[in-house]
Amino acid sequence: MQQSLDKLLKEMKDISWQNRTANFQCVVVFLRDYNDPTPIICQGEWAGRITFVPDGTNGFGYDPVFWVPAYNCTAAKLAAAVKNTISHRAQALQKLLVALKQQYLSGNPPG
Image: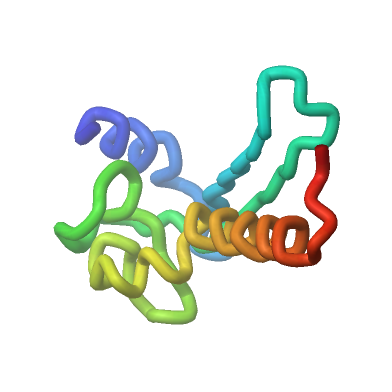
């Protein structure tokens, strides 16, 4: 993964801070079975910026260069508990949970 980070930073070395926007995307699909005609599809997006240098040791992948404006640090400096509530994956899964509750607790589940 370090090679990927190095390549990204090298490719972006001349890009200004204002133009270093980045987004993580996550799509979760819930299928009741292989032929499910109405899957539940939920998406999460986590917006940030790409830093000029890696910072932090928590997480994995691009976390050391993904700046999270609301926390004024990279994703790699966030505690796992925080990241697991604000990340793109957390957002998609929370939407899925809401959708499942709506369908299955409404007394009118599909199928």
